[in-house]
Each structure stands twice: as structure tokens, then as C-alpha cells.
Image (cartoon, rainbow, N blue to C red; front, side, top):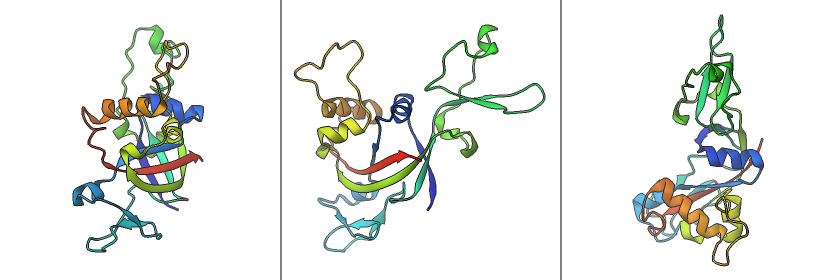
Length: 193
């Protein structure tokens, strides 16, 4: 079993904590770089193409049984006599929880990429990995990505879907037209460890 870090935004951290996010999709750089028209699971934790004319590649997030530790935006809380006595997490922090808030001291948030292992509060176990085209996501898988109906919508409109909301979120994170590009993605299935 190996352990690797993985970054998540605040809304996705909240979805993990709520138990609604059990999948994540990340661009499969080897398949994209090779311009593959199809990807084959070699059944040994690696992927490639049927012709075997390119090196096989493996998922940088691990395979079933491996663990991921979540990196998220955080703030280090130092004590008067000791450094780093606690950690606040932006995804779930409520302003006013700390004395510094009441004194008007601005919290110094640190980007998720800089979170050290010891500050992580969420561990995930990889339960499955596959490669697919982004737009092959099903409605059930889009729901497993942790997306929700936009705030203020009393009931799902007839035209709303988890898949459509996931496409909107994907473009928000990856840029305009990134959904239409339909890249190869790693589909990493996880559960809280």
C-alpha cells in the first residue's frame, strides 16, 4: 500500500466529509500526450493501447488498496509557547471560532498545495481506477463526484442533471471549452479510510 497526496477544493472537501463524493476525475496525461483514440486496461494496474506500440502507463494516484491524503486550504494556529498547536480548514471554518477573529486578526490561509502530511485530516482509500473519456460520465457517476444542485433551486428543474452540473464544475476548474475537449481522464473511486 502506498500513500499519495491529492488536492481538493473547499466544496469537494465538504462533499467528501458529507459522504457524497466517492469519485474524482483527473486528466490522464499519458493518454492525452499520445493522442490515443482508445485506452486498454492491461489488468496489472497499467494502461496502454491494443497495438502495444507505446509504453504502458499507471495512475499517478495509485491503484485499489492505496491511500490518498487530502490537501486542502488551511491555516496554522500557533500557541504562545509552541508553534503549530492546531489547524483550521477553510472548507469548514466558521469565522468567529477563534479569539483572533474577535480581535480582528486576519487569518493567514495557506494554499492546499503547501499542506504537509501531518496537517491533513482526510484519508481516502482507493477502491478502483479506470480510464475513460470525460463525457462518458454517467448520471450516477456525476452524482458520485459530489456535485449538487445550485443553491436557491427549490426543486430540480426539468433540464437540470448531475452530469450537466459536473460539466459546469469541470469547466470552472479546467477552463472554458475543457468539457468539449473530452479528454481522457483517470476515474479514481474512493472511500473514507
